[in-house]
Image (cartoon, rainbow over all chains, first blue to last red; front, side):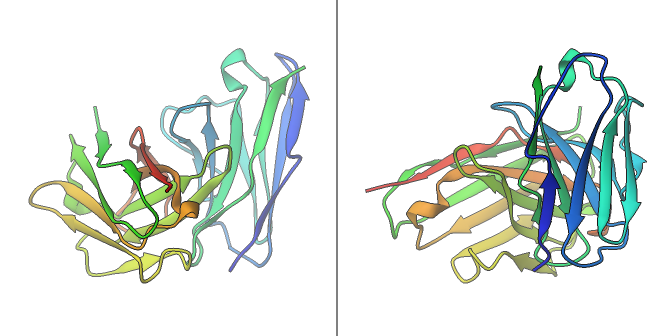
Length: 107
Length: 121
């Protein structure tokens, strides 16, 4: 199975800050990576697919990059609505696997 | 708007069975791969299974293989997860989700609200 490791696990930041979350795969997954945002008690929301493609309707302050084994999700200027937990997920091979999550908290 | 609505969750004893349903609306259900994802209390997301648009290909996580059966009825725009031999560790919120294309190579772009399964004696 492909292991997905996110860092950091928790991130404290202020409104307006730029933040970056890293996701590493235990083997190459090409660009078959998605990023999701989840708020407490809610279903996840797709932000990015194919490593860098912004899902329709998602604000442009979100961006994704990377290929192979190392990927990043960047939020260029944090907004109050962005405080949430973020997950990466690989869909290169079965079983699909998620990172453990990164909680973005208010500083 | 495009919608997925899960039902069928509840409290069941270890070893028991439960069937989850997911009703899809406002999109051409038969065009899309579909998936089940679960989230144990206070934990991260875990992929459970996915099914191709026609239903001819189904894959499972090792943790549920042999106990869970995923199926779909394209005529009824519905997705199912038959869960047998339930264990305490199957306790979770179960989400159905649409894979955003007619292949598995896309993220999951539409999610239901989730249905809670609790396995306890």
